[in-house]
Amino acid sequence: MTKITYVEHNGKEHTIDVQNGLTVMEGAVQNDIPGIDADCGGSMACATCHVYVKDDWYDKLDEKSEGEDDMIDQAYEPKKNSRLSCQITVSDKTDGLIVYLPEKQV
Amino acid sequence: MIKTDALIIGAGPTGLFTAHQLKIIGLDCQIVDNLDKIGGQCIELYPDKPIYDIPAIPECTGEELTQNLIKQLEPFKIKFHLNERVDEVKKDNNNWEVKTSNGTKFNTPNVIIAGGVGSFEPRKFSLKECEQFENKSIFYSIKDKKIFEGKTVTIFGGGDSALDWAVELSKTSKVNLIHRRDEFRGANATVDKVHELAKLGKINLLTKYQLSGIKGSSNLESVEITHENKEIKTFKTDYILGFFGLIMQLGPIANWGLNLNKKTIEVDTEKFETNQKGIYAVGDICTYPGKLKLILSGFHEGALAARACFKLARPNEKYRFEFTTSSKNIKNRLGVKSD
Image (cartoon, rainbow over all chains, first blue to last red):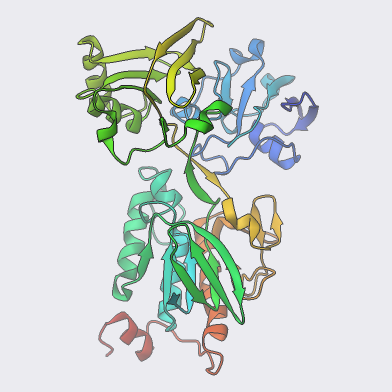
């Protein structure tokens, strides 16, 4: 189990044990974390699982998937540290990862 | 007022196959969709992406799947109402009265919601002040390009819509094109064209900037953009165009008195009926224990909902199950010869 911290826009923190192999999006959806919609179910066809990765974590994650930035263009208020949480796979390497949720997804 | 045995909301794969199932058992139906084309998410979100889990079709793209479903519906000449969003569903005795955004009215005993994740709407600027200028100086789609002639137009976005309009409007307007990163996601030829026009000074290209403010009273006057490194630029503009793709919103469906679970509609697994008699939900938008959001599940759900419609559309007839391989009735409906 790997600990992932989701910080809601209002500052409320949720630290969850997420099983390795799941995505950060799935970890949120399965644990009813508000703020991640994941309308397309993880097929990278929408931008409603958009998160901001804590700055010092951003470079430690695997590179963005091909086409991920194209979808992030369509996200709500994208920033430099924007990612789609369906494209971040949870592993021992991501233990302690902190992601911030945007004000809204749509 | 259009009378029909069943009205389908949503022209995605599930809505299309549900129409097929209704016609096969001898009911008529019409389809409403908010998009300007048939195919739903398959055509809007992933026309080129291959799908590998449609039974008996090893591989096909979203577009191919849509084309095949349309072909399967050809014998039935189904009436589509595109570019229309269903806004109201109201009880009218034993029937439902349905009204669309264009004012089209239907009266039907059966409403089948095959709405996916809701209707597609353009993503708008998050800045609150933009609302007061919407459809006056700020647009998310273009109906009449003539209004931009000789004016300064500031376009935001990095996809085909943003690039195509930047190229097109640069012929008659002063164009600023602003995108949040250096890479564009449009067709290569268009991206090259934009860079070429930028070099010639026909398009003022600014990347790594995003909208951060607007100024104006009755008319829009200026726009403020902020660079990734926090540097701010302000310049005059007459119009702002935003092309950030489409988002999906449940929209008016939330107001029809249906039992919702997150953004999905609760149904039974016999008729795929909601808590309202004669309103069904099929495909991604419905939920029940064990629901799988797969296209094939939508097909199954639509086939059962269609049978349930029969009872309300033909209360004095008895539904008889028939196979397409052997039924004369079905072959007549399909317009194929029976042997």
